[in-house]
Length: 186
Image 1 (cartoon, helix red, strand yellow):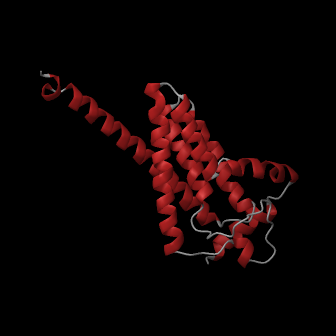
Image 2 (spheres, rainbow, N blue to C red):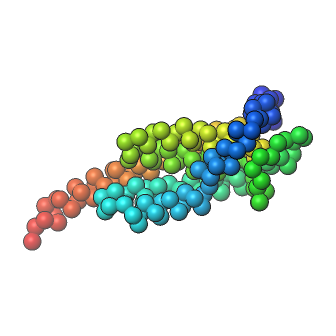
Image 3 (cartoon, rainbow, N blue to C red):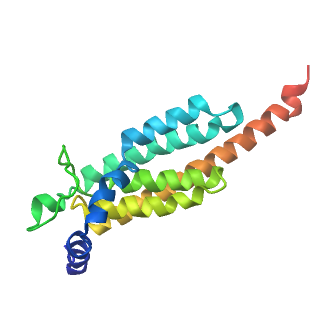
């Protein structure tokens, strides 16, 4: 492991330690919970008006796609979590299951949420601040290395924007097809 990453990990995990971050970390970690994200996507599909349900569908599709990518990467590049391999790691949030560290699923979900919502909601881009905080908490809590959070953030952001792009292209094609002469002639 790169010496720079270890220094950055210990800086975030140890040197940044304070009571305020200790209180906020469990709350911010929830933003990247996969189950919370799935529930939010289903809520959006069920509650939003018909023309806005696409947000929930794109979001859910992005969660499933990024979950598949995470599954592949975690099995292709197994990497133990810092609290299981390093000495003196502060573990602020207790993990019930010891999963592979690379990449961070929480960072992926948080950045996917920010990417999708930034395309559909006026102030959705503000969620990127929360996504950064959620990714930070994964390192701060001793669960992930900085590179795990960075790669997770990249996966979430790219997947989110790709899903929005695909949905918009599909929607345009759908409107063009239904409006074409082929379907409007009797």
